[in-house]
Image (tube, rainbow over all chains, first blue to last red; front, side, top):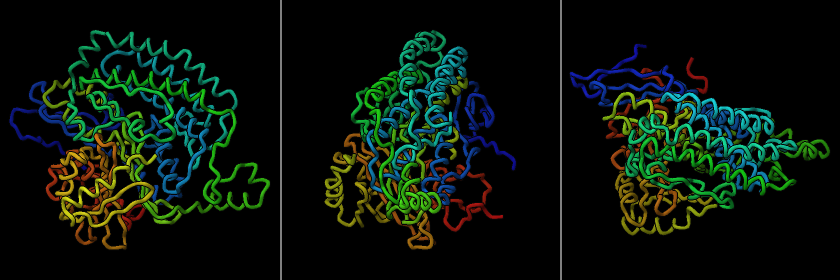
Length: 399
Length: 158
């Protein structure tokens, strides 16, 4: 099929530039049709869908537990956030409560993924703007987080570690010490990134005053996450609608007033530090022993021990892994704060073993909608900064 | 956990005081409130919920289309609203007949609705009257059929 390049405003003196779908700064396959007047952007139209895999449709033919593995593939930089949101939604339909120990471990791991995700963001965003070093430093720390995730779940990225009703496995001995060791050295590393960027004159010139988004526009366009908080709106799902025991943790929500790329950068760096604070609290909160899964016969698989020693356990194990479980009819919308903003899962059940409808409210999808707002009237060189600063993950945009 | 619904009675009361016919049905499931409205009233109700100082649902989180095939009315549109001032969520639901899947566009009320409506159009085949740019968004422009409909095979047509 030929790719059409239309001139949206139809003005004679403008030029159309097709940016992407293969462009290093789009972090995936995003195509933006830019209409330029000289170096000034007159209009910008994002074209998405190049990574559309039909995850929502696939979920409808899986059992509730099988669908967890698909959620990893949405936002591949923060798979645990997706796992968590989906599991919380299904747990809401089932009306089951997860043991505190599992809730704290969930909080700890999702905050670690938030740090990892923001590290990737700060590194790649800096590379887009010509600063190479931060990327290498950030990936050094991210690697340690990946190793912790691997230690806990057996996987670096597509963890599928959160299960409906709790966690997949008991975490191995010594993992909390490893997280604590990581946290001991981490603040010094954050200081390194800030040394390289926060007062860097080139960085300031490339981000300050660029890509302004007013709080009114941000709310009207449904923008969320650090992109919204950089515009001075303090909406954070963890504070507004706490889930998974977030109300027991003491942390601040960084907010910046300026609404430009630099403000969003400051928000994310401050968020990294706040997440480290939450992880630190979680380490002291997690009880050494206790259940990691709810007891709900017929819905949550029994423990390995029980499966091997009792006949009911064996029957439930067999039934749950072959035909799944059937929640009551109903529909819920569960939102969490993913690294990119409000991640929502709408799950509808018709009383069968497969979800009737799963809809992902992907924060990147909505945030990308604000891109024209950021770039129109600015220089073409700033488009790269504006795409980077909205922190999109195309796997989630296209689903 | 469900602090979001402490005020649901007041929202519904306000809506009913404003127009008793606006609320067709109120559903409550797991602490989430859904207000079912008629298609003709959707725009008025939306404007009321955004502008009334007691509600201020200025943030549109999401629009989800659900296909109930073969049940009629076949389609449901769920608007997930958020009020930052009242710290509350609310779901508006509109039911659409299978042979007439048309709804008014909410872009004038919530600009965020733009891409959500394009997605519902692309994957469910629901048309939005008054939408500024109703094109496919995820599927190729020349795609035939609406993949998220229940009568569309999972593996696609072969």
